[in-house]
Image (cartoon, rainbow, N blue to C red; front, top):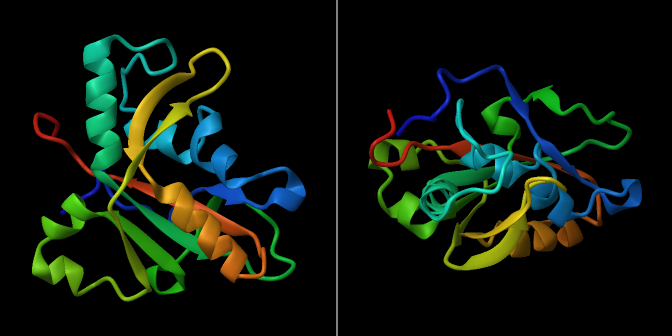
Length: 170
């Protein structure tokens, strides 16, 4: 199982969840072109920043379903940086859509040490920025993100989406 990106980086790029700074979960996940889900579904050369055709929307939904989410809890006083070096052992939580987890090789599953949640539901959400927003079905990461945020006494968290390839993409 490998990322759709060329090679793993030392840092993760993420979106902040911190309503006290005007960054609620729905903004971090969906509402800007650099939010988690728009970045998960885009690939170099895509027309994502325009209204997609129906066949493109289906491809974007497949890409969203072929992803997983990593959560990092910000430390008290830590300054937010959208590109942060985070070692895997610092991940607070990982979320996998059920199909992704069930198709994960056992040796990869053994590497997942932080707490994990299997996402069984999809939700229909508006994805993207003002000029490119459209509705699509995506894994319901939002419910679990809201729960983790509340359980952590509303301490800021950083969300990072991992893009996995879909059939026909190398």
